[in-house]
Length: 259
Image (cartoon, rainbow, N blue to C red; front, top):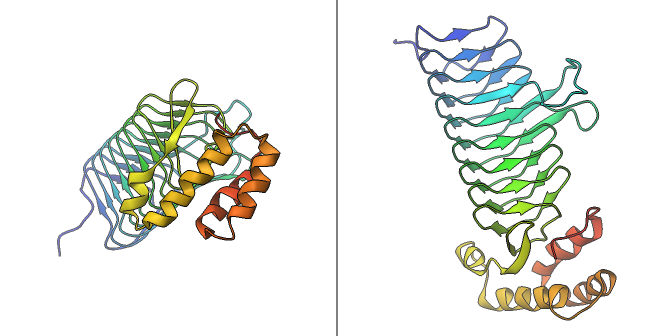
């Protein structure tokens, strides 16, 4: 049986690769790296440990995964990068490990579509089914919730939280949290309605989308204070459970939201 690891690849003896993992030419995989079944690693990729990569991922050429965080406080502590299952990671992506000042782990979930030149810094958490277009970048400690879409060249400031089902326009710079369902654009990013088309594609009913539009108006168009808007949205949640994503997000935001 022909080996799935190219003879020019360098695999550290302390790396653990499932027998079904494919590794392309001139790739380097270091000690403390674990890769599960069905994952394909392209050519000229560097993966440093401690890093775990799940099943059926496809990692394209020239990516760097699991390198030390770009944080001057880092002193070679044993921090982690964790990548889930069924992710596509395109060319020249850079994902850094965590720091002990936070969770100690940078974590990417499942079924994410991560395009070329994306940077995910230390201690970020990326959920499931997200899309990060070319050159979008996350500073440290950012959380991206499920089904979020970042347009090309979107930059997210450290400690921001990006809610479910949002979308950002090309070239957006995000300094505050983006609540679920919102479309954001600009420098610094401001709200521009809801991601109605994305919600349709994900099976949201016309009635639910109308209710979410009403919730958006309560939050952004009625001149309510932030606390007043949270109370009003909590009341609306009884007739539209989908608004619960917004109320829960707003209850735990600490940086304030895009306005």
